[in-house]
Image 1: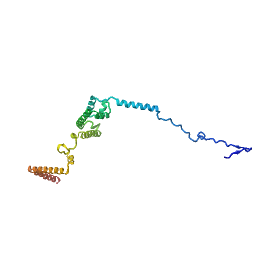
Image 2: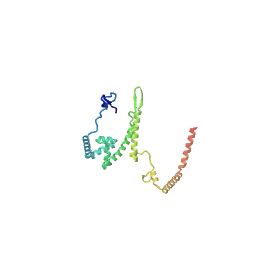
Image 3: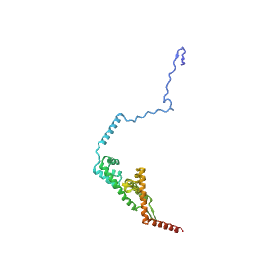
Image 4: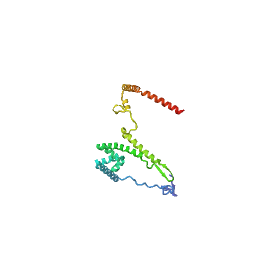
Length: 244
């Protein structure tokens, strides 16, 4: 370090360096103070845990609202077409409580199943009422022809389709749309054939073929074939005359 010398030859120490700060430079932005921490204190966290523990304890120890009277009222609402949410609202409970009671109380599960079966019959009666109800289908206009209320018609169709779908799924034996071929004992024919061995299928096919041959023989003896041929010939003749 270079040092200046006085007239007497003694070294003169260099002036001390001064550290610049943000206040010395007005263009440099000042540092913002850190915001206070939002994390609750240990005491506050302990209080929150204690409060949550008391809530859990009260929930576990709360008496059940299930009574035979409440169960009967819920199943009555379901039987007359109400949804589970509507029945739960009328009983002052949550819908999930009804599903939990089905597992916890065997008598309620049986009563609920009977109510759902009765609900399908109620929907069947509602279908007739919806189909016969012609109110609000036409919009009257002064001095003009009535206008079809398409929104009301489509809404009625949606109500019908929804009930038909539920009935075909929940009461398929009574309200299914298609008829299945069944074998002895009411077993679906397809399932019956899939559970057979190859030899059993061949024997079943031979039996069906023999029954078909017997039906053909009886039809020939009764003159059914001749009548069928006559009907076919007359039908073709009528078509030819209509084309001419």
